[in-house]
Length: 256
Length: 358
Image (cartoon, rainbow over all chains, first blue to last red; front, side):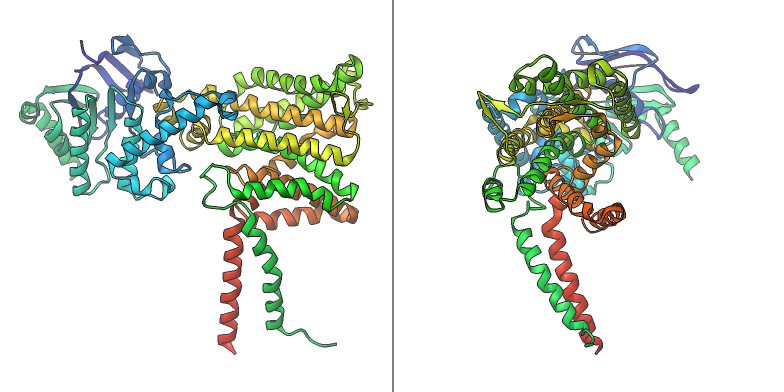
């Protein structure tokens, strides 16, 4: 059974069909890529999966559960982490606090017990700090653990966002254009990091605008064009698919 | 008459700045406020609070600090909601009023012991905040501000009109002094220790709260609600919890206010009062727990000093607020250090430039 599956998703904005009968599956332990030209509906699909928006019709299942009408925090609490297309770190916190906030669903503590700083809160905070530092070490951000997140350079902030999503120990990780705005070296580092994450048993669903990086790391790629799924398969098969070539070429022509 | 030499004037200014700079050494550290552990400085503040009324044994000063302490409790709660969770509330005067009236009604009509009435005040303010908060916390930004403002106004109307329960515009008199186990807090000095004791307790509670999971959730919500819910933070619930908590703080403050003033009447809980409290939070500095306390002391003291100038007091008050906001945009509690160092640097540079000219 697939970890994530979508059936006949339809989403309309004021008469414009953003997604038209899209069905997709993400298998456990794989890296799935979703590509497509601008305005193909990739981000809309991500919003629907993470619960920020609701589809007009169709169903979304995660770990066999129907998550179509669940609130975003309920969906992420099931074990779905995500990063955002426009960077969304919490600049008002330190680097390590960003990671610790990412662990939120695994930590204990309500308002009263935290305010009274009861023994188990003290213990869980201590453990959380240790674990957060381990995550930062893996990302190479440990040297900056006490500086404000807003003071990090852009590439590091992107890494931090990834670290935050990992801190919640997700089973599925949604990456929304992780390579945008990165330099080539940073992109290569990111690819390695993503492969490493998969090795640790996390399923990854990645949306990218640039084809290069996804082609390299994904096991399977789906192509969206004008809200329709036009191709799905291994990177090689997709690369040769006539409709895909046409879609990308057309965009190039209109751009030129 | 001798003309004043300009450069001499600047030298003296530097001299005036020196005590301010000394003050800044003990003020909360601007860039390290996010290290939320307790520090030696906290011990210093604690000592200063304990000794201040003994050194300065003027009853008027005691009374002023009692009021400042009560406002600080209210501002502390509000700063959790505004400074940390990044929401706006213009209805906290109402929760303050609910606390005061609960104490007033319970003690004068039903002769409930004041110690119980004190907790009942927090509870009733929290309960009302829960039922109000559930629908209105779905609103964001200015809409939330307007909704809470509306709540405050409705509360005032209810206070004035339900004469049987609240005594209408006249209010309720003869609220007894606060007392615990037969010990009555009947002088300003005793009240000072009572209120600052409560304030310190609530401060420690808040400080623990902001360095825990809850505090991180609050900051996360303030920065990006989408990102917060993407890691499983239940945004509506945390917002409601912190709204209820800050209302409970306001209820406690209101109860203490009723005991100290021994009267509760609607005039004390009007929009003007809400604005004053919000000013305390903003002037003191958002996202910092020392800020609201500093703001409360400053504004209470300022109002008192200016009351001597009668009709000129309001314009002077306004000008001072504007100047403070220009020179301390992030609050006097957050960036005192940095601002003073900046000002000294600015003075020094200006002096150098002038010397270069001549």
